[in-house]
Length: 257
Length: 194
Image (cartoon, rainbow over all chains, first blue to last red; front, side, top):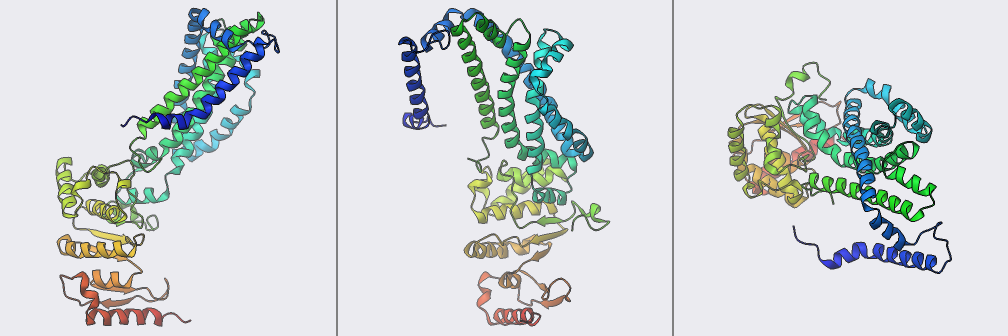
């Protein structure tokens, strides 16, 4: 692979970075000039200082949140992919399960989370349950829809070769479903971060969501914003990792992009 | 059609079928695309099949693109790869069904493919059924033409093409060819009432 020239980077990220810088400057000066009190909106510089000052504590909470996200995500992907494939292969299963899937998404999570805490206690698993419930739906739908994208034409061709149902799945339907599947994974990954934060807000003793809530209670806005910043950064990094994985998997398909 | 006849299930995997689009899998190389029929119904060992495919690739003028992906090939090359894959699926002997295989190609590429097919034709020693709307293609490639002039319900008309073999792509300028073409066109339009 050739290194991408600097100018191209500037073209794609320049406008975004410029806007970020402008916002930071306005924000910082608004707080410094006492237009906004610091406990309502802390200056970016004090958020940065809080990040450095509490780095030990923040890292501990970050790792706890990361663990919840990863466990929830892996469970969502395994169950979601299996269920999506199962629904594709057996229509009765699809008819029986699909309504439940939709219903599971209409339940307000905030209302359900106290129940999870009663079921699983203040452990890792009550957060994993919330993460799972938010993250698993996009995986099922993207798997199911992706498998449907393989046209009748490929199916007919493979049938003339004498292919059975599993060969159809392995040779054409799964490879053709991958782009849609990865879109679902990216969506699901972002939902995981939100799910973990909600789970920690509602009950817990560790994690960035819990930390930000405690700091908000103490009016320590800079620390709270630092935790929020870390959560958001975590979501971006995890999203980019899935995007990288996607690029590696789909690298050979020059017909796209 | 595949699902209609009761004995259809036993025929699947026996007949080599080439559809209108090339239907090459975009994430597989040329060689891997040609291996697909083998992966589904292995008849010989993998080594045997690969060396057989390599032989055919060089005979088809595709030896250099063995590791290329379909999007890197021209339309004519893709169609040749699809044809090769059909041959691998047929496994020799058997019946080949070509359903308007060259319809998607432009006129120049189509001529080129005809020329190339004629050179190859006699070595194939297979029964080939070709569906086409192209009169010259029909005359140039076939020994017998069954005319479906007035739609599905009309009677089949058989025309014997008694042009000598091996054929040459320039034959379409010979008087015998032109006479046959005229005859074919006359019969085709006789069925239509304008």
